[in-house]
Length: 109
Length: 118
Image (cartoon, rainbow over all chains, first blue to last red; front, side, top):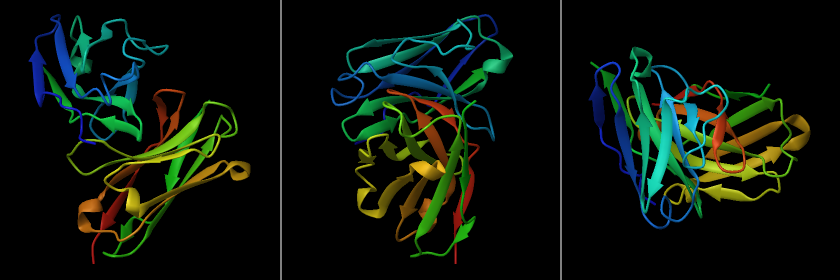
């Protein structure tokens, strides 16, 4: 299985909204509603931000939202804040386990 | 409170076998729907899924690494062990263990850096 495809970088100014895409196949993203998104700051372990395509764990800001259409999932961050600057990874369930995305570096200008 | 911690060697030689142990607390690996997985991240690179084991001993492996990986659990000790054979310098990475709810990784260990070098 190949890694899910994400843009290498996305940037935005404080207060703006940005969207990160995550493209897979019908064997992963398109086949299951089990897409998750993780935020990772430098030197830290990843943190779960979205699970099951669009659900937020307790404690995660409602500025983070997820969606899916066909083989592509998306993470939207609204009201961008300096603390949102980090790497973001999507992940999808597959028949052989899970697969991660290539990762996106979010820069707050 | 769910916590996980990885332990094992920080340095291994090429061709050696790596054995990592994940010791966890705050949950039981005999509870339906629960799993523990291993994920790695080479320096400056993306996350890579390696293996997972579920409460019912169902095991899943990354297709590209399946021949080199073995995952086992010891429910009584709250531990999961990952072995990876024939280590190579490209396997240098931070290795994370993680708790799986039914559909996602929701808790991560702090990670342990393993360097492969002669």
